[in-house]
Image 1 (cartoon, one colour):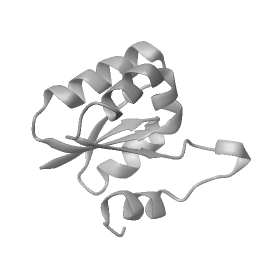
Image 2: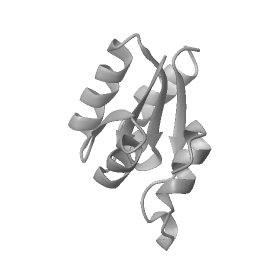
Image 3: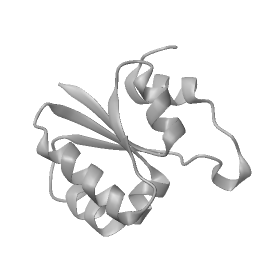
Image 4: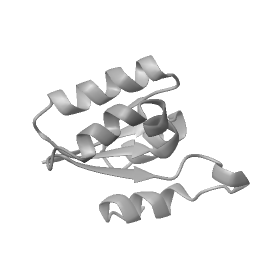
Length: 100
């Protein structure tokens, strides 16, 4: 079972430091392509997606969340949400239990 992250450049880079592969998404087209790619790989057991990217394809994400049980989808805060910065170390630790 693998983890897969979809988000902004900093999030994808941060998770890659602990061996989590992923794809950056900056628009709805990229978000949809990353989502479909993550679901196509049956080795992905947990998909981590930032809230801002999930909002780009909200109907797709919600439809999946309410109809499927695998892989698990975890939404994490977006970069700079409500003017607050975030600590990528803490996010990685919370999402997958790996300390940097």
